Length: 139
Length: 150
Image (cartoon, rainbow over all chains, first blue to last red; front, side, top):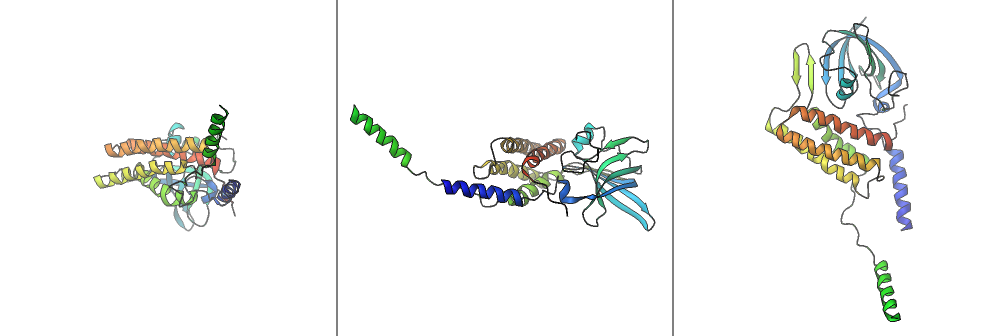
């Protein structure tokens, strides 16, 4: 009985220490808090999907246009904040603030969008361990 | 009277001394492997089978278009429903509070997804797919440590 308890506790400790963050919803697993960025680009594609919606924008750079994939919150939470799949018009120029992905991929975790009319909207996910940048009204 | 009491006492003690039979089941993979090898791939089937893609060419639904594709969604939902049981196993459950309520919520949602897939209801698969994610979050927020940044 005592041995079983000790083994169980050890197993729990090991599992806790070694458990990685799942790819779907832990900021630290995919994105780099040391890579804050602001991207201005035209919306070219919107993926209105679970668990995260994605907004793809074409960013003009001196060396040519780059298409960036921006991960935002779940469609349900975006909808509650007033964003639908039809709100972001293809071709609209927006400013996205967020944090870059780990590595060199053209992808980022989007925290805030500034629309052409100047409106700003928090589009990130709450409770994912993202940096406390003051943009999340829930944190 | 005394003999009866002693007999009863010996009977009770004999019951306490009996060794319980070992469980007929055991966990084969750990929780991390369960997530990565079984739950996550099946959740991806659900999530990849619903929603929309909007481009300059228009809006495209991502919902299944064949019976076989709908069956894949149903099968994935059924797998998630049963994986919920695996999470609640005595040998795997971390506690009987948030772990259990999250697992039960995930199972309830998975049952709804089975039904939605059988009815080929794309909107329901999308909505319940979002609900499924909330139960992932509710558990991970409590029991999963964030990966250390380099």
